[in-house]
Amino acid sequence: MTQSKLAEVSGFDQWDAARYLAHYYAEVEADEAATLAFITRACGRIGAPGRALVFGVGPTVHHLLPLAPHVRELHVADYLDSNLEHVRRWLRRDSGAHDWRAFGRHVLRGEGACDVGEAAVAQRERLVRARVTRCLLADAAHERPLFMSAASTREAPRYDVVLSCFCAESATGDKAVWRRYVRNIVRLLAPGGLFITAALRRCTAYRVGSAHFASADIDEHELTDALLAAGVEGASLEIEVHRVGLRERLGYDSIVLAAAATRGAPAETSRVPWFAEPAPGAAPRSRAAPTPVA
Ligand SMILES: C[S@@+](CC[C@H](N)C(=O)[O-])C[C@H]1O[C@@H](n2cnc3c(N)ncnc32)[C@H](O)[C@@H]1O
Image 1 (tube, protein in one colour):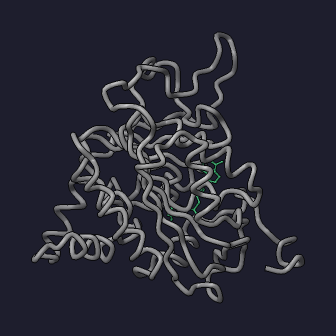
Image 2 (image 1 turned 90 degrees about the vertical axis):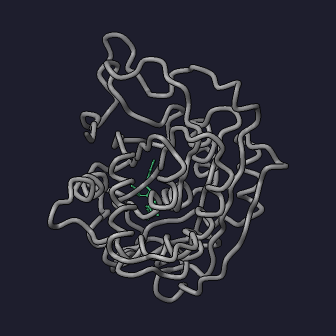
């Protein structure tokens, strides 16, 4: 990316969720094939089914497909309500919702299923719909990144699993900010919880239609350092680089995939507040009302 191109980088006020879906999710691209296979394998590390969060979900649901059978409850979160609206449309089976069936087939095939027909895919989609209980606004810039009203759960355990794909490094071009985002996202996990992530590697800007969005230009070494600093157990860290050859069309040639447990035993799960709650008398921080799905 040249300096002149960098000057044209868009902010998230210019994000177009429909264009993003059309540009990245018309079919299963090489980066998503690698990511979905990695998530499927990483889900094998989940012990007792607990509660999972998909952070920076965007307008997508495909990463929930391999995760849903391993958890009891799923929450999804994103910075933009316009993204969450696409997720809600799919959850409600609205006629204009994005079609994720090709991703469902891909996931089932990757799990080794013999039957990847329409009925099997529909069954997995039903499972995802049954598991998702909340769509939350979030901002990784905050130490408590999830926005919820004080009326909601006051004290709750942190998540057993947090899955965050192409979020922290795709939300900023600034490495220091990226590190802070990683730390705040990992902080949503209980001790011993599993963090699964995917990131654009060595990418300064990615394309969405004719627009470009900044990316933090990170690699596997920087991700390892950021995860260790955020509190993951070094011995538990699996990290992989995949060449995907999408530089010309999308702005990156490789991705990095990682899974790791946070330090501490799962039994230590602390009941600390995990949602941002406004101070008494203060204006609520959320930009829109939290959205129960059911
Ligand atoms: C490249 S998209 C990835 C979406 C989806 N996870 C995927 O794999 O397609 C980056 C996402 O990060 C979200 N994002 C941007 N800034 C954020 C922030 N400060 N906190 C949380 N999410 C943010 C955007 O709204 C967008 O959905």
